[in-house]
Image (cartoon, rainbow over all chains, first blue to last red; front, side, top):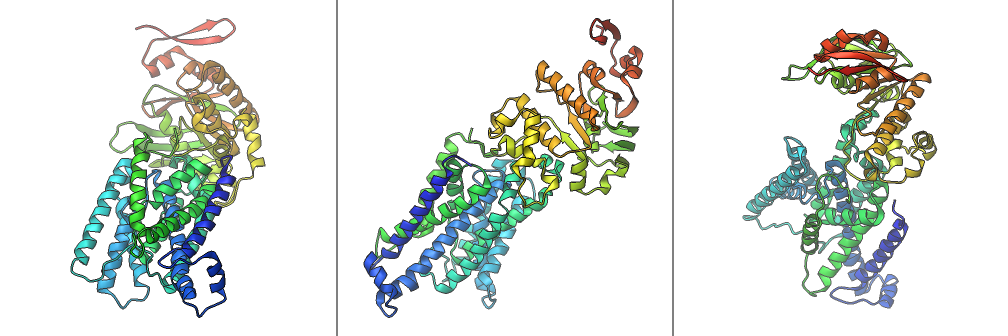
Length: 322
Length: 252
């Protein structure tokens, strides 16, 4: 744990509170702090509907999605031992998206279809990534991931070209029903992630060294992979693919609070939640009454970040800062 | 520790181990010596359960090593290899703490007090919070040794432990291994330097082409014809004042 980790935790918590307040106030209609206070006691008012039926579910959804994606990214990085591993870049999110769309066309009657199909898609992508030789080399893993992503995006476009239903990765029009599902999926997954954080630390050591001390490496690796896939595809199931959160947040977090996953995962959770809410709030306020989706915002922020990360000479193999 | 008719064959390679049987005396330092490709490291990996022999078994405390769970085995046998590749930042304390994992649940924390003694014994207390990546090769070696000792093993296996050490640390390490053996630990190592091997060992295994040529005390194995034949080079044993017998390789 770094010296100033406590301060950074405080900082991100303060930012989170401020952003939540701003997100409650800002939008097509501006609701001031005073008005916000009054709406709580006036359930019949129009502002109450705006805040509690539109803004609160949207805010909660962004928070939980941001936290889930950031933690999923950190876990993929730990398991694949690769600093730019992330559900979007590895094709796991787009596979989930494609399966979700396929499910909507083929088995529209199935309850919980989106989530079942999304996690199925994520698992298919994971199987492809972990079979064969993709794991033998960090560059190969990313190239296979990018190819997988392009394939599933292409397949999805193929399916959706004839359909009216096009999946949009946005928090617009999030209902309380969607938000509740997200909360249940996300909070349970994040809770498990915090418990399993020491395992991510163990995977900093080579497999041989872990076997020497009697650690079942495969059990650790697969538990964390399945957990990360669960977190990432839960977001895809309800919202869609949102790129780069899983790369940007953990990599910045390592600089701020250090490389210990027991510190890093909770921080990534908070910082991811903040980043997603900030991106979404910005996206829906800059060009009122229209809006930019969170996925677009993240692509604009995250793309350059990854380029800078790699251009500055950091090796892909392992996560040393040297 | 004991080997019973161990045979190990690498896929598509001629080298391996052929029907090795012999024992490693408890509480003594045994060194495995032999020319390159004799199977020294292979044998060490078999003993450490990293390679499973096609035939025969390794007994640890009288039990077949494969009858033990991973965790039980790790409480009995520890291995110090040459350099490890790390994938992320780890502090010295974190690395040494991994040696305590065989005694804890997978999700529980290793208490710092359990790690401290092993840091201290290996002179690492001041380096505890440093990143292992920033240490010299010799210091890193000490960290891995400390982690292995934290396993409190009955058998300590070391693969070329002196490779990254200067002469001073080589001597210090050998003194430490002798100390551990005197307290009952069975130490088994692979060394290239045969003079060092003869000097510090109680027991030697001489391998050639995957076969055990002879095992015995240094005095029993220190014969020029035997060494000349095994290492395929002319050898003479000379007496050096203050040092004792010294094996010299003669020019062809």
